[in-house]
Length: 414
Image 1 (cartoon, helix red, strand yellow):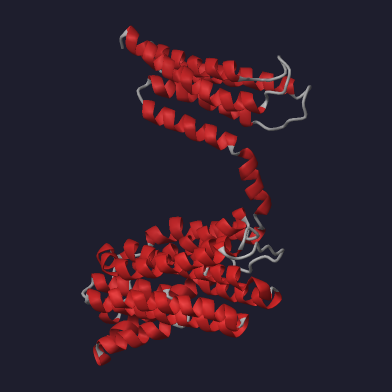
Image 2: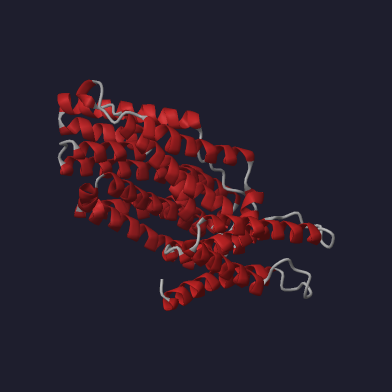
């Protein structure tokens, strides 16, 4: 290693320390001099120290780096114990950050510059997001923590060990593919649910519809239609919220198809995109011309993930796959379309996933696409009926009329 290269690597190690020290120093900026264990300069020196010991260990013996790390740990422990006499601060975050800074400085010297710099940025961001992360933790409930762990269980633990092999009639049952689709749906719903929990649903029905549509546009429709009874002068903004959820459902369907079968996605793109954009446009116009609306009522959404519901969804997917093959055998394409319409009465996701998979296995793309559009159309009709019967005639006209035009336009261009 030349001297110029050494200076360059030590400069990177120093910059890493200064970056992390900037956040740590800013957080304790109100303390007097000498009242902080480590600040901007100290973190910079720790990063530089890691770089210097990295160079020495490369030139002499790698074991030196381990002893230097141990020595720094002892110094920090003494400083931390002394600080407890002045502050009742039992957090060891700064001490861990110091050790990481040393390690990243050494890592840069060993040639892993990109990894070291990227890690420094991520760690600094993580340290800076403390108020935001703690705010999320305060909103987290036990059932949501359980849901997170269960989602990780089915995706990280169970999915990789399932056999990727087809079984049963028409080879319709593939445990790995079925469970992967369950994980996909659960993951999207999970993100939408926590978006609501983190941002809050008191920021207006439109935001509620945009986020809640990732979880269940039907649930959003039912909740906002119910509010129309209590707030009869806010039909426009409530209709905007419902239509936003419905438009998000169109986008969600397109997302699922793009993940499962990009070729089918290209075939469906004009129709679903037109449905989505036209519905969003009307929702925006309604929201723009509506009075401000706020309510203290929380949107009622189901727990983002329940293991029992995942098993039921997986079983339902299997049944849909079997019925699709059976009805196609005996009734041709009409059987597939009938099943799509029946499935759309309850949920669009199962038939969307089923058609996307079957189109990869020989089902005509036109038939698969038309089946998905039928399910989307029927589901939109159901939500129009809900909004009219629960929310009233005015709300129903806004929602039903918009969805009718959007769906018709999408079917025409399909």
